[in-house]
Length: 416
Image (cartoon, rainbow, N blue to C red; front, side, top):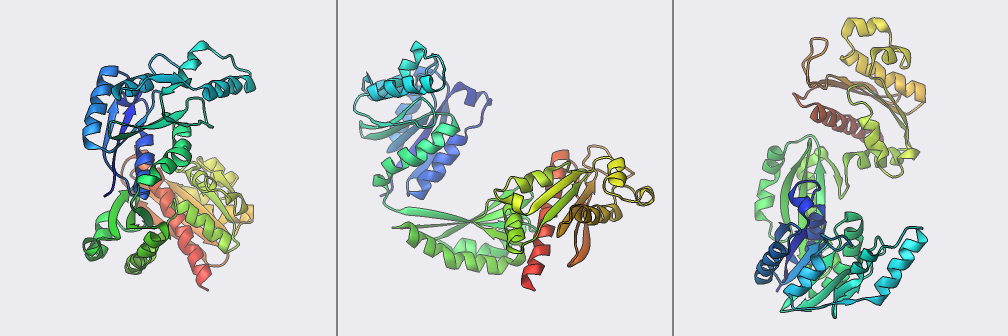
């Protein structure tokens, strides 16, 4: 029978909304992969009485309790003391941690203050998780029929400690392995996507299929459960094929993180280079592309042609074209794509111009955007978008459309 877990995030800053509880998301994903079911997330402030109440409730409804936060050296870091007391354990000094703390501060030329000693006080008999990413160690112990794991709050420490310490510790409780895979979709809304594959979704038991809406795109998550990772992965394969065959070319990738990752991969496969000229998106497109490792091999550069003077000067667009059709026009978008391609000697050029809002421009309403893609191989194409209001939304959706147009352009090359 699968073990159940509850995640108790400790920190008043979480309740105030000063920071997001991303730790819980990452922990839930990691536990699902080893077949441990997370049924509850709890967030509680730095208050001993309320922490105890949360723990007492968690004891009743979960086999495994994972806490995050409150392991540091300051006065409000009370997790260890409170959790240990709740389970009838004393805190004892862990000498190896004391030595590591002294070395940590010495290597960085920082002053070691007495309050750092509190980080070396850990529940008696616990398994200590060495923190190679910070100062406060984590730990795990068994008491009162519960398995308790304490992890630091900062994601830069919590995430690697989860991966290298907590998950290996918990794998002995797993009776199965779960594998989730993602089909990424652009160009079809969530309701249309769900309708296209609804019969497959409702008929599946293992694997299961679940649709999700993201900003401007969608995904289908296929999750299988089996004795081993290899067996679970194998179960997903025929389902992935059924779904992708059904959806067709709106599927831009399987198990990829983003549309830009797919674009960079296709550029590399086709030995092509890309350059961009952006107006309303203000460099957002080039930023998304360059966020992908290895993009330097295929992305030559971008021009943020926000003003008309830059469009006519740096991009060499005839001023008469701008005056006749407007800076926000199909004609200007095409020239932006063609000219940046020639200027940077790239294989593919992209031009984006539009009205991000909130007001109109050139008698065109907010959300009017023109996206063009140009190559010497296939010439130029342009799309007119009507994206409505919301400045950042308009910018983000324009970038997605631009990347999908590049993707389709490159797929035509690959199919030749």
